[in-house]
Image (tube, rainbow, N blue to C red; front, side, top):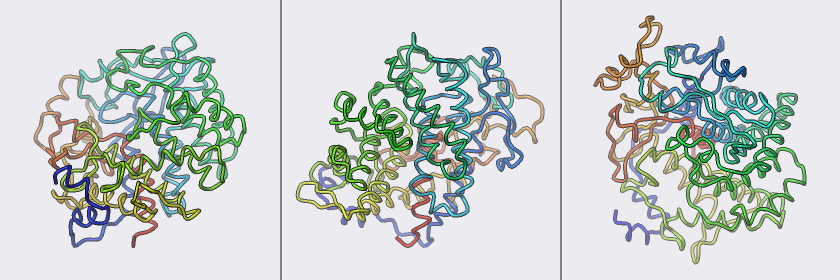
Length: 491
């Protein structure tokens, strides 16, 4: 569909034209269960006795030991064996937000979702408290790791440890870590209050560190984080994001004062239209709009205004519309791992719809009025596309539906499991599996891959990492969206 025609279509017509008729009803509860299970395949460290992804084994058991710190645990971000702190913290924040907003719709999966949050927050707690005035933000040199195709259980590449300090600051990664710890503290506030208090205490300390020693971790750590997870948006967005989560978690008025005093400088009045591990501006505005919509905090009305601008940018036919959709109706932001933007956007649509519903609010996009129901419909279209209602009739969640990617760009999934191949597979020998045309021997159930291009095209090729690599930060917000639709299957 030509962009100029799409621009003129009202939302209801856009959704009808891009509805792909299928005979099967989507089982959102099954998709939810699988989306959470994926995190068990990404675990680093000593696996627990109740580990359900049994083709994985223990890995990274000495992480941090050469530096006399315990950095065992956490998540591998995607298809490699590096523990990157910025995306891991964002993943934990979004898993926690998913539980906070939609945990009551998770039914039998709530405990598994909390376990996924805790696996991340346990590690971040270690990273934040191991050494005073320091935050450990990465384990392993990605340049070395990417020269090998190894199972995490076999990896023999250097497990270098990287940290930010007062002299070499990283306000972006530190403030995101504070956000993650604060959000996780809300998750555990009622079911494990002692752990919740510990998380919140650490969050306040890390945020103070981030704010006191300002600077970007990309400048401090350069080639070990760039171009992999450069902080392209800078650190202002994370400072406002972190303060917002601490305001909610702690109910300490000093964080509201911080938001009011620093908001302008930190981007409160900037419109931005992407939400991801790097850029938190839109997420912050939606989060803070809750205070205005639900609690009538007038000082936060500004964030509702800018949240509305973001929503208008997504709605075809409305004033302010500036998004791109594929002919099949998928939101398209970039050629590399596009579904990360789709899952994060869907989550924000549903969360903002929830906030609006509490006071009967709506959004005015020029002459177009957009309701909470409209936001839910737009989010559902994106979720359903990922789960198979698309021109290719392909689910982009591994193991869900009748057709899904089989050649996923993921070391552990593509190499024989230890139980099937007990002897080690060396750095170079693993590449035969990367380039093999055979399906991955270990099904990475629940993984959402990078997804199709702007023409709905997808090449199921293991070496096509832009489309076939999964990531924790793709799945994390999707957990919340799937919980919503699992709890409202007839919407």
